[in-house]
Image 1: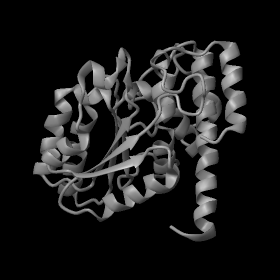
Image 2: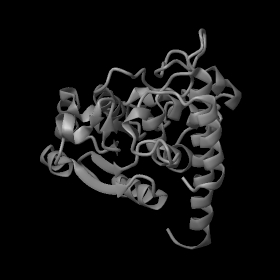
Image 3: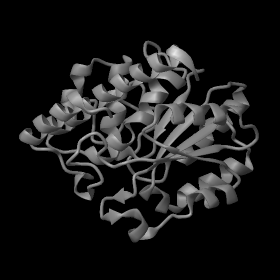
Image 4: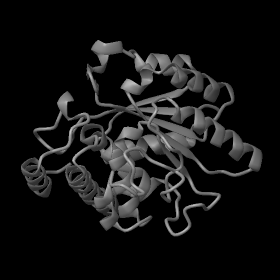
Length: 280
């Protein structure tokens, strides 16, 4: 990726990421509950996928040949909702109904009610197994869509993730690209102190995966890593993305207390003011 088009693309994605971060803060603040920290850490990954890398059609969300995205860390639903709204699946104004009675935007994604949601998630550890099923179905049906999964690093403490990792390698499911949102924090503290999943690269390699490690807030690295995954044949790819929980809002960054706490009105104003002037 070189030249002016590259710069234009990066600037375009940075602006989308800024809008998505604003949406996350605004909707969680309005709802009075939600998970800002882990939503903010995955913004660049999801933005790059929905606004550049994935083959989707918001006007035809059930298009059989669409690429699939699974938010396995379902508590980061505000991130997915903001990306879907900004991509055109539903009006951005609906974001303000997050967690309201009767809203399609539940606290965790519901594939039965909201277009663009591929899997109802929230109980951690299940997304990669469903990705396996989708990849096997695509093979049987002769379709070439790709499946992307966003996993939390704390989520890797779930044994089902590793069963799915073993199966994906065994069946050579090279249409799967998994991202690990490696922000090092979970609800009770630092991941490495609660139940360390390290060394992640060695473990995934031992399970037969192609492994890449990147800065999860660098669009160029994200895009290049996904291009590498496209070129990898015969095995799935995992992209271990180093991220910062609460990224983009100074008082939330790397603070475990913002895992599942909504900002107060004055904190919403402060966060939005920062997002108007800071690069994500």
